[in-house]
Length: 363
Image 1 (tube, rainbow, N blue to C red):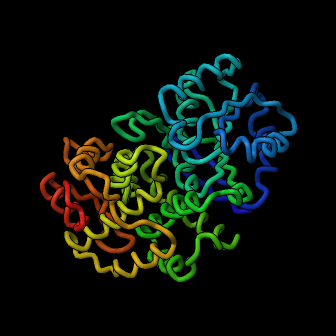
Image 2: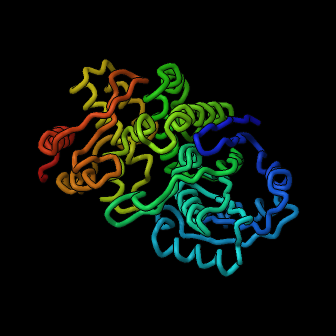
């Protein structure tokens, strides 16, 4: 088992990473929360069918209530958030109760926001079941979606711990593996050229990842995430660099319809666009063609879907949390491991989008 210590201004906590770490959860709860009153598991339909009984078995001393959300981004609506709060009230959770967030990034976002807002804030623990959640489970960003923007209603609410059992990952479909691994590649690009080179050299088939390759990738991704959140918990500065690829990625995800196109696959297209901009605007020296060949081999799409309107994408990007005064700001790279924030005008951005999608006949 690997233990990665996360340090933020508001809270320090540990990520427990490895095979079978969920079996340590019961003892952790007993030792860290001797006055705990109730446990409340929040999960989704898919994870509940696959893994809920195993989690219950690991919680030897407890009989938790369970809230089951729809799968994926459908969990992050006002209606589901309201239903979760209602069930928490019906089960008489109090300030010494603990929420267990059991699932992927969407469940983690929903659970964390419920925990942040219920009785003005109660404790929660992240139990990720996806690769993507190596990013979202660490750092305290919790939120739900609005039809006009992803993650626009939320809070910063750190978990008490993260129990990341890689055994849960064995049931992930190929699309979800790609979605999660895109964030690992992002972490390498914005922070660690040696890690990026290791990934490029060693990872060539996401469906044949060894346990050791997966553990190393997750560990490095979490450590890099901590490098940013430990110095900038509230995203007043460098934490924004973690949004590399997300400005366009979130716009694609929203325009395709949440749940129709995965987060990570959308972000990968956003990263390619940002790398293009970085070469053009900042003189980034990077073999983008080699990168695209590699990620195509991993199964990623590399272009904006043809059905999407570029004007609509621009409008979505202007609504993004990272925009300031209506100006779209992109995370770009001066070199691998050296990100910067760059504002781009609407007209320039639309022109660059058109050149990024040369076969598109409509705009």
